[in-house]
Image (cartoon, rainbow, N blue to C red; front, top):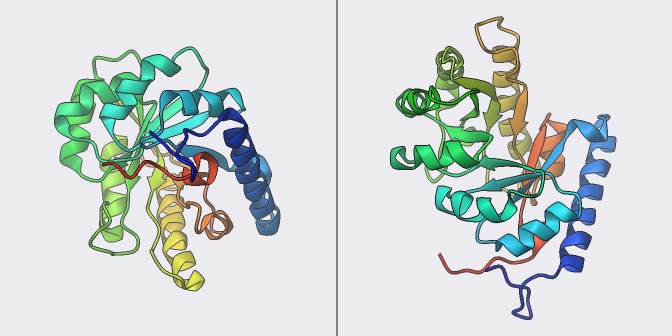
Length: 245
């Protein structure tokens, strides 16, 4: 369960205020970048947040949430089903969790191998509509980060786009962990260039691959300046998470 510094779960007023601050920050970043405010969506990272806190955020106007674990996505899904929203998986997908992910996620942002894409596509064939996916790219090259190497990202995207049961929506990355804004921006720019190349290629299934899910609390302004269409914020809205794994 998420906790505030005093130890209590975050109340709706705290969440509403955090959501307002995050939204204003995005608006200011868009203005600074010469972009329309509605060109960037706020994804609330809800890892280890209770369903009650997520409901409060949705009732306050949030519309997009992201879970790191399929277990949490499926566990909270029924409690949130009555509220209009879109849920993404922003953490790793294991093959034995594919069915649950397909049931609750509108988009899986963390596809980084053709093998996983193939398994997902085979299960998604049973659905009435394609599942949205993004290619996760390790633009920073940090060994602790997940994602395909940038040199392999376009080829993987073209292969994924050929699966009829999946809809390639764009690309996702976790930014460089650095205090150097120039280096962080360079990494985000590289993802934008990959997206632009794929979206403009004319290849089958790539026309809608326009999303760039990148940027978190520490660097969302840089990400928006480099073209982010989705920024992922958690503690900035909900407060500190419960440190229990």
